[in-house]
Image (cartoon, rainbow, N blue to C red; front, top):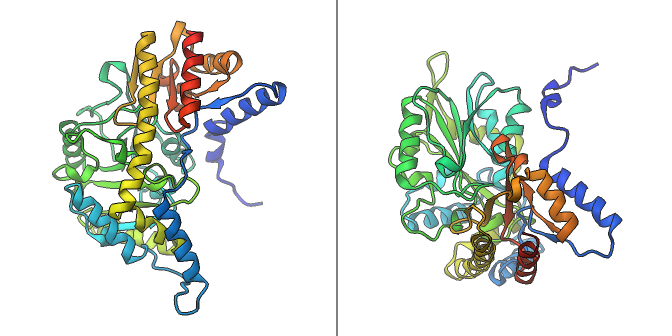
Length: 398
């Protein structure tokens, strides 16, 4: 009999969003006449932009002709897309070499798979509350985690404790679930801490396109010294509505080098390239061709229009919270609104209460960690009419 990975016994019984889906499906089965509005899972509702759709069609046509057909692609991704992403970084004031960019099927995959780069004895630091993938992917590997408190007192933007050592640090900004965004000075403290501790920062910037404040960094590499200590993950899921199309990218600087136990220097860029070429056959040509269109002038314009639509939804939700006197975070440079549960409720209690009374679905903060047990997340990714209707129902309830 094979020895199985018993670390799976340490995982929660079900993934957060699977539990939400189960409760909603049960309610709908018992109440088929009720219209449920979902502002929980962060899936988009706006369709792909016209420029992207045209590119998908063009690429599909190319795949149907012998002279333009593509088989296996480069492990890192096609040059045309990596160059386009590099240019996008430059337009935002950050220098990233195309050879440091790896195309994938999304940030979720890469933030989970990056654990292959690091030995199980490392001290893994994650904030609480936190995106569950960071926690579960490390538990699957048998790693122990150290938590840092993100709470209302620090605006859900925890800072490093010089007396606590970490080897691998997860940071998400704009944050999922709290919507909080680190400023330049705060991220510089984290970079300095990582360099001092010879640690690596795993920086999730999946929501960078929602930052409208020009003083807030959209990349960890806007911070001096970050290329010596950070890996950045980004996704087109929210930037361009690719949640079902699947495309993302990870930036692994060539400067990110650590010494092995035998004294040999090992490049994380080279290691990740080796890992990807062994375990991953790349994102499809059709998707990469369409993804490149996202970074053209017209593509960016169309994607920004969709993001602005979601940001207006976020404002509608945030304004509702303000009118009701409910403390909240996010909703400005982020698609998420993280609010304190009214009337002393805990988050799962509020979930069931809202589902039963007003048929509005959000995400219980407890699913993101102990510090979220009295908070609740709503997303701005619904359509406009549903968002307005959900907030009318919410106001009538509280």
